[in-house]
Image (cartoon, rainbow, N blue to C red; front, side, top):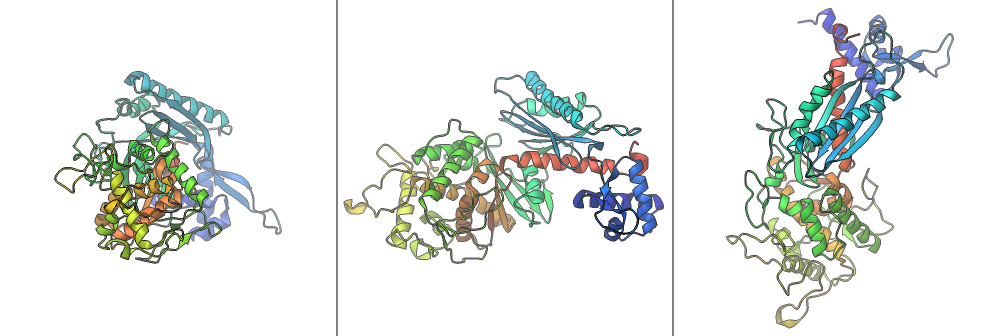
Length: 540
């Protein structure tokens, strides 16, 4: 059935606006070429969108010819403003942008754990209102006759926890501040003209990585968020998947080996969170003899990981480079032989030999299955493999055991560190018969820390890969970005040994800013869905 004239006009308007958003200012002739519409139709839509206050003449084309140059049309960015919020347990980050995503104002407010719901919400709302006023002061002069010029049109909120798919509201979740649930309602009351939406923070991070970050070339991938807490977002065939109850990606509750108990419906302690959350990462750093961050939160864990990566790079520690082919040979990255730098990441790609547990899980028993790429300072692949495995197990810090979280009694006997046992960075102890195990020249505590952290991450990632076969896992959050290509390569190397499914592991290129970017992109999409509507709904 052919579209009605009004429907056809609406579709043409949206197409032209999307092109102007993606390509920047265009002439009427360029719009005609890109849309395939006739010259009269393009002239008609340009007049219509100009009268609605959505586009305007922003200059002239540089093409010299007889008569005046062609006029360039661009979107009126200050037609409406957008706000994005990254809501965390310890505070709120806010930014306000125009319709093209240009940031006009930013604000942040710390909120202590002892703040009541009312004062906490008031602080957050005040930060949004302050940023909105600052952005409005920067806006271009209002167009006469166009309502809502420069006002806050849409607010996108990213928050931890589950989003009810039926209502779009943040569900009550144990361990999260009560003011989180009240914030969206209060913002809607204080900003009656704005549209307020809430989305899980990890889902927003995945949307940002898909459109602006490390997964721009992927329709199917999983984002593994590593920060204060852990989570995952699943994008299949270009679509974000939320699940029946909005809980897709609650990987912190995933039961994993190496923890003291199983997680419960209200507490992820004992799940994957206990191995890779910020507190576990900072504890592991201390066990390995690395400097302990001041706070065991996401930024503190990222500081520990970033420091370890820098120390390994400075020492020229050879680590395997990630590859995309199955069971491919793993060359060694060395000073002067750097890989291409990924956006937001480090310029050293990486990986490392698996410990005995990882090799066993993949069906490749011990040193004989080791991929090429051995540090020339080590005596042999067998010695290196044996040492890595023995230290990881004896220290109680690998996937099979750790000092603070022991394995359940029903599984493999626990080998958690006890008095007299070495920590991650302690010197090797005597082996069978009293002879000390072979030393690993150049095997820094920082390198051991990164290998064990990769072991832990791979345990959860392997479960996701086995179920979804995403082909790509992005390590996001502050820790994922801090680990960069080094940590991503280590995890990829382990996944190759644990799973027959080829999976590329990439570091986030957006890191801790991904939630804000995702919230802003979501707000912009919603605003444009309404503003780019047929003329009789544009309010102008």
